[in-house]
Amino acid sequence: MPIFDFHCPACDKTFELLVRGSQTPQCPQCGSASLEKQVSRPAPHGQSAAMVQRARAQAKREGHFSNY
Image (spheres, rainbow, N blue to C red):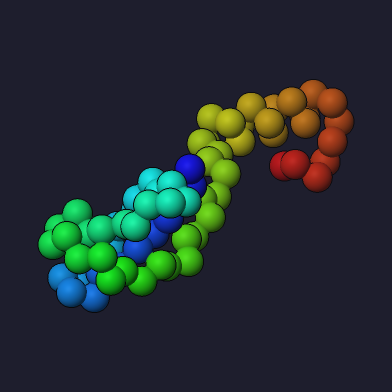
C-alpha cells in the first residue's frame, strides 16, 4: 500500500494518504473525492553532523584524503 500526496481543490488542502488499489481516496478535511494526485518529493538521506564527523575520522585513520 503506497503513500500518495493529494491536493483537494475544494478546500485547497494538500495531504498524504495510504491508499489501496481498490480504494477511492477522500479528503480528510471536507470529504471530497475529486482529488489531484501530486508528485511526491523523495526524502534525502539523513546525515547528522555526528555521522559526518565519524566518517571523516574513519577516513583520516585509513588515509583517505577525499573525505575531509
